[in-house]
Image (cartoon, rainbow, N blue to C red):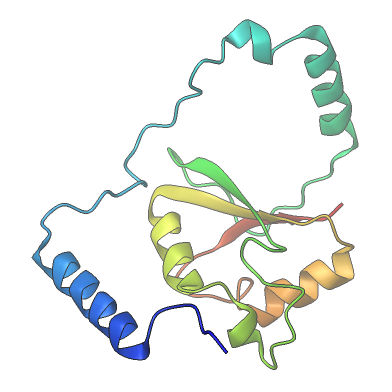
Length: 150
């Protein structure tokens, strides 16, 4: 039998070296401060009549019920619930195990610079249950402006 991979000792040494390098590093890239841009996309390629028509139809049929009012000067960050914030296909036993790593910290950090909203392609009853279990609707450290389902 031949085994392929790294030994536990090699993995531990690599993790320790990585932790030491992070501890010595002065510069961590903070992508919350980065300015977003669409590389190579012109406004004409994004705003075609077909795209504008589809956008108008989507806006007309969407009903947004505010949970918290938008804050002045904050841009809106809409986050996809399933697979992005929450591992909905895992067989984990608890909500804590289904949350993406460092999700609470991410939501708190994002809220400092953005208003937050959650979107999901699933039906409202499941979206509400997941958001409740994840603590999104009751957190004292961040607030969602709204939650959208399909």
